Structure formats: structure tokens, C-alpha cells
Length: 122
Image: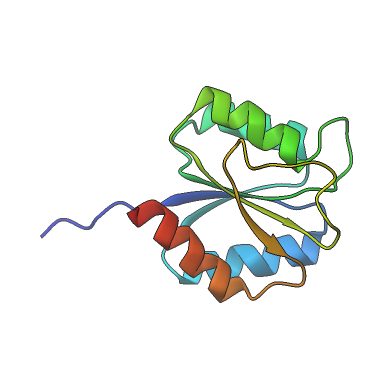
């Protein structure tokens, strides 16, 4: 019997401990996890791993691009990409055009895993 390939998620979060904890839970839940600390690193990683299926990104992070900018650019490259955006603050601008699922911080990582699985199953 052949194992089904693990879904691949990219977690973009500048807070190291939050990113590592989130990555650990997603990994335990059966995801292959890629991590990036900001949008530029995520774009670079996506160039190497274009088969990412889910983007889970914080909105506010260092650099010239925020999480919404990142989601827009990656969706333009991979329209089938599922997007989950998180922020402790209200979104600085609408993201419905992406489209994206929004989760406010602090979040329940298992609930976010379930949301990612549901997006992939849809």
C-alpha cells in the first residue's frame, strides 16, 4: 500500500517561537512544513518548493511586503494555493480577493490545522 503524500504548508511568521510551535503541531498533524521568517524568505523558498499547497502567514512582519502582499504574489504564481492569514490586529486592508481564510491571534493551532485540512479537501 502506498502512503499518500503529505500536504505541504509554508508557515510565514517572524516570531521564532510562535513559528516553531506552529510548525511542530502541523508536522504532528501530518503536514510537511516549510518555514520562513518574512515574505522575502517565503518567496525564495516558494521558488525552490513550488508544490506548497497551503500558505499560513502573519500579516505584520519585517521587510517591504506584508502577509497580504505575499499571499497576492504567491496566488498569482499558484492559483490553487490555499491561504490562511493571521494577525493580532485587524487586517490593514481587505484580503477577500485572494481569497483567504482569516484567523486572529492568538489562535488554536489544532483548529488552524483543521481549517487547512478542510481547505485542501474542498
